[in-house]
Length: 458
Ligand code: TYD
Ligand code: MG
Image 1 (cartoon, rainbow, N blue to C red):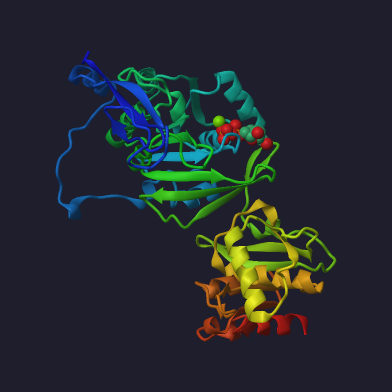
Image 2: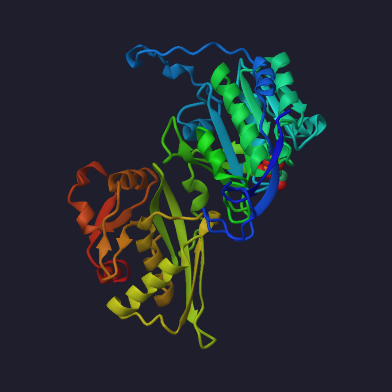
């Protein structure tokens, strides 16, 4: 064995130092350094590891002679998952799926393991026993006719032994924080362990062409636990997120070497596992027959996907000296800015009012095209006049009260038309390029916010 050396690692970003530091020079976090004993793996230890998998010797080739086939991607049978991956799992790729505890990472991967046809799959869990995995498999009620092997294991060396016997076409590991390598002498979940285990899996994936799906936990502040280095090693980083009080889950690509990061997948967590949601607007628009004041529908784009989201607002006279502002699913500072624009440019006296804002469905929206819907919802609640539920909005607000154009407006209009909306309010600067005759929907152009107000409530 090589001689053991100890280093200090920042548990946030993986920065390595030979002495303890109070503040990480890399990420600036305080008190994140932990001592870890690193045993440099000897050549012998590595080669024992390496013989476990057959390694064809590499040969330099001319780039024009390198062949690849789009069709070799492994489809997962789950359209939403495939969409986020860019059309299926690429052979030899390392895919990391991060998310908060209980969001459904294990469920998603087990369902994937059970649904991929004609492939031998090895599902390795360091968190659950085989019986627990079976219980979950029974719960998700997927046909279990595929060749899915499960094993509960926590050391990479033994995992490679199992790989040797099973020879899988797809490896799933739940989770990277629970496995450890014997080559590194620090506890599972520490920076050096995560780095070593990920590297071993990467070498395995690249040499054999077997894709590996890895679950990774995320920390309280929403970043992937463990070092950033892991994100650099893997090919695809997916984030599984959603509000736990709602059943809806979103799968986003934060990094994808083989596809777009604009795509998102939407699922609903049900009693019997995750269900794909093909039409997200179905749950984002709250169902009510009456016309209610303070509600407006925004035609947003989440990545490349149009999503219609209901914005609800309540404006009431402030009881306390300092009026309250509260937003769920929308940036508070942006709300304050929009309210200031309404106050200053349009003369709506909101300074003495409490303003509450809620995005239905537990969504977090960052598309600026939601601005006009937010402003109109606030105005509707302020004057207590409902907006017709068959009207939607897609525009950004400027600081002078001007209604600004947004990206890909035609896609939003086409989707609004398809969903049966009667009217869409957009910026007049967006309207020039649009062929209105192509749509049945009434396209209303507005230049400044007062104009939108007049057209809605006049
Ligand atoms: P899980 O996949 O264990 O989450 P993670 O691996 O991300 O920690 O999912 C756990 C939650 O999902 C749990 O709170 C129960 C719920 N769930 C369902 O609602 N229906 C189901 O069929 C399953 C399997 C889980
Ligand atoms: Mg889990």
